[in-house]
Image (tube, rainbow, N blue to C red; front, side, top):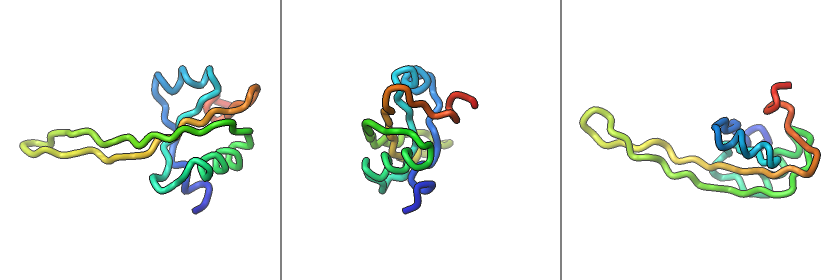
Length: 94
């Protein structure tokens, strides 16, 4: 699996923006990827030193579509902690 296939998109929410102050960045990742693969992908793509990686499997929510019950897609979220003094410039707007 290529590094660009592992990291799908950044998660930009209020909570994830507050976590950036603690050097934690949140990404939507490929469901088949492991912690080691995610750490390596972030290190190579953004040229930063990664200390820790936490992974959460987010279950899809039940939704109603007209008269039928449906479900949104499940996905995998990675919370990556960077070393002191490191940051990802894409998130900072530079």
